[in-house]
Amino acid sequence: MSKLKKGLTHLGRYHLLLAEAQGRGIHYGKLSNFASMYPGMRVLTNYYRGFQCICRKAMMVQVYLLVSSLKQTTPPSTPLTPSPPPYSHCTRQTLRDYYVNKLKSEDTSTWFIPETFALYPARREECEREALYTRVEAAEAATPGQNYWILKPSDGLKGNRIVVVNGLQDVKAHCESLSADSVAWVASRYLHNPALVVGRRKFDVRCWVLLDKDYNMYMHKEGVLRTAASAYSMDDLSDTFTHLSNHCIAEKHPDFGKYEPTNELWFGQYDAYLRETSDGTLGFYEHYLPQIKNVVAHTLEAGRAAMCPDPSMQNFDAFELFGFDIAITDDHKVPLEINNLHQYFPLPPAFPLVITILTLTPLLTRPHDHSDHTGLPHRGEQ
Image (tube, rainbow, N blue to C red):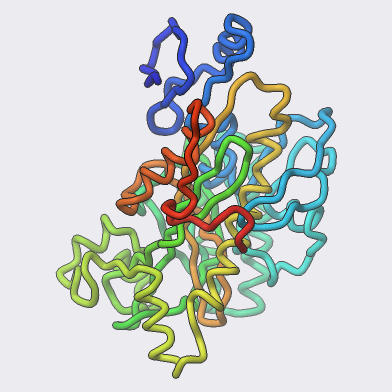
């Protein structure tokens, strides 16, 4: 086992390489050299090459297919979803393209992503600013005064620099304020009809997902709802306590922990709340969890061609841990929030053991069956 330090040039000989946050320290080219030095050995590392395609907000909107000439094969089925059709040959794919070309759905109301545009102030040829303005203008004509958009920096974390605006004038003002060397931003239709919990507060759903070396997807059976600190209202779009549910923001509010400890609810608690407030007609596990699994599976499938185009052509293996942030609306949809899929975040107590079992077992000479202790769906479970 080895943990790479930035600037390390001597690889040594090992089976497992653990990089730091955002994959810092991994030299994928040197891993190929390692394979030629030690034939038959494959290093296992904790970041897929190209993982940024779904871990940066702008790149999540514009998922690049890095290899267009490879013969694509049907991917294996996963514990979350059956296999989709083989990949089409193209050089670039967005999540929007994935829906139109792969899932054959042009009805945006059925998509798991809100209407979103990528803004690249430093790369005008790729910037979708004019397309954004056109769409905002059209929406303003259709619903004047209720044209809400949320803008986020692609590299942002913990709710930093996120703004919610209403109308074309405010959208333009923010976009025009970005300097030419600014990081990329995304602009999405704001989900102004969120489902609410006690205290009329909005929330998002954090799901922990493990992608193993064979691109099988596992979602932990437990997850958490992160609740906002203030009652939901559209009166003040600048009120982060109302519109953002990040823990680091909520903990600064005097009502932090008023309704639930640390402003968090586990899946089971939310399921009980839904059943109580709907007279038993609505449940999290029946109505929302299947949709959430679908969102997770399709997001990772959309990024597969960039992250793992052809395993037979790379000389190392990878696994990765993701945190998906998903919204729930009052009409029972579960759109993916355009956020960074985080690699560093608090985990349930048993999850580090789960990761160890699923990722390190192939490296052991005498693997053991821990399937009853993982806390994850069994292989093939829907």
